[in-house]
Image (cartoon, rainbow, N blue to C red; front, side, top):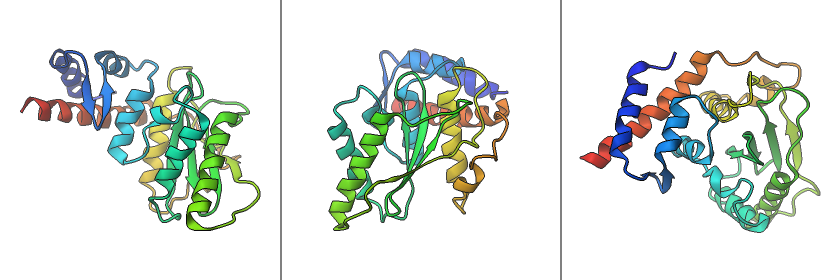
Length: 224
């Protein structure tokens, strides 16, 4: 179960946040914290805070209703241009009340799609357009013609969420597991036919504890 002291600390610190808390330019509202503490459905702000811990793009800038496809493609391309091309680029995406994870390997012109919902899942066309355009911009930046079409691979062997509210927590756990694997063997691990059971609650709570401790530390620093 979620560490009691983390939950109590984050709830008690709500009174320290009058309107919002700014975490690396992300505005975290009191209701974001209460939703997270209650294991409710979470939005882009909560995922963005976790992303700030691991150093990837703010999902609020690329998910649905966050600007034009061209604008979002340029944002993704700008991040790709800062890598050596061999690095993986993790991009949580929300097409509308559901979180999925895209993993971009720019040099290979390959994108992996991870969805925590069970059943046959397909990539949102808008997300595809954003990433395809971003890779074209990246290819132009490095002076490469590139292939005719980006390779998209669905990794259907991920753990599956048990109900409709856990998608954001699962995407954060996917990222955590991938980061902590030095071999970057996520393609084989989550390949079709290797489907794992749902995460035990302890695995989700591990991510929630990390998030809570991170936010509490930011609150503490702001009060010093």
